[in-house]
Length: 147
Length: 147
Image (cartoon, each protein chain N blue to C red):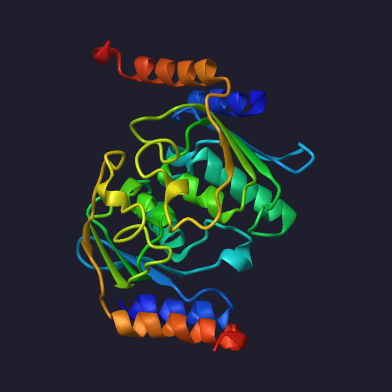
């Protein structure tokens, strides 16, 4: 999660919502890491999780990352939650909870749907405070009128 | 939808699940079209809708395709449904309904969630039979033991 937090900090420095993600293999080795790049790439799907999964899948030569784990600083949105399922991620660890936009413990709760055919093991609240602080600082600095 | 069906046929010819998508601008001009490329690109997020949105957003130079429409041969999955929302697509037209994996009229019904902050207008069942026939033929041909 330390590397995911570093990716989130780097995203903030680029003016992106600070979220970072890391994919590790079954032995815990880092396959790929990424931060959010929606604005930079002009790509609404360029969330940290999608970019990390794409990079890890390209590296392993398969769209399925069976046995791999994903660590991300924020509860994944429904798009990323479903992508994590498609990628057959074994275990999802996330930092801050996201009641407004999350899709794992909030909203559609993707892994509880009958249309979801692979459910990762989920652990939420890992380094929750640091991950949440990064987001709060980012939005506070960008919206000074909303103190 | 004719172009989306052609993209779906081309995807089938590549050995991919036959789904095709097209993004048009406010005047109905084609901005981008794509077929499913999950296996070819080793990318679990490379659904037709995501690829078409990414290409259209790159072309317009913005991650938000405000005023644009998306036409796709199959009901979008939850990942794509959420990406369509993030892209601020004005109108989503889809072909076949997908009770097993769809996220618009089935499963999480993404646009009915409080975590979804932009809802496109949705029209389902456009050229439904042709879009569904393509999928049925594809799976019948690949699973001859399941006649």
